Amino acid sequence: GAVVSQHPSRVICKSGTSVKIECRSLDFQATTMFWYRQFPKQSLMLMATSNEGSKATYEQGVEKDKFLINHASLTLSTLTVTSAHPEDSSFYICSASDPFDQPQHFGDGTRLSIL
Amino acid sequence: SQQGEEDPQALSIQEGENATMNCSYKTSINNLQWYRQNSGRGLVHLILIRSNEREKHSGRLRVTLDTSKKSSSLLITASRAADTASYFCALETSGSRLTFGEGTQLTVNP
Image (cartoon, rainbow over all chains, first blue to last red):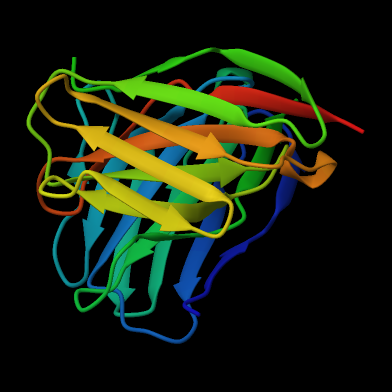
């Protein structure tokens, strides 16, 4: 079945560091990728929709300069948390959508901890 | 709000029992999906039911959808300890965009 790989799985870094998270679709071309954020024991909140070759569409309240998204190819989207602070600590999950198949396929998530 | 509302928030049962989780929503949907999440992991897709469908089965899973009541239920039969996880409903409204419910934490005791 379709597989989405997300890397790294865990990041611990100091406040002020920028962190890049990669999301790759391994066996299909993903024209659209989605980035979610999840706080402990809460639901997934959509942060942005990433379309290959165009600018990402951010949800209301999500700072696009804080969370940079690049979707340069049909198999790779990246989320960069710039100048991360402790309040950015969270679980970030990506998903990828194959236009010829449903449903969305999710990565295993990245646990980001900012000290 | 487009978000699905799930109940119960938490459910604890014994192995072999059935588990039922419910999801209610307020908007029109293209389809409704159920996902499972083990602690600290990504989501695993369980089942998708389209707005023109009323019931779907997959193994021990049974999903119903009542668009007139804007509600869906997920039934897991003959539960196992390995079914312990969080279960989320997700509404697809447009452009593959999903809105997730708050989730139900299911604990199956051996």
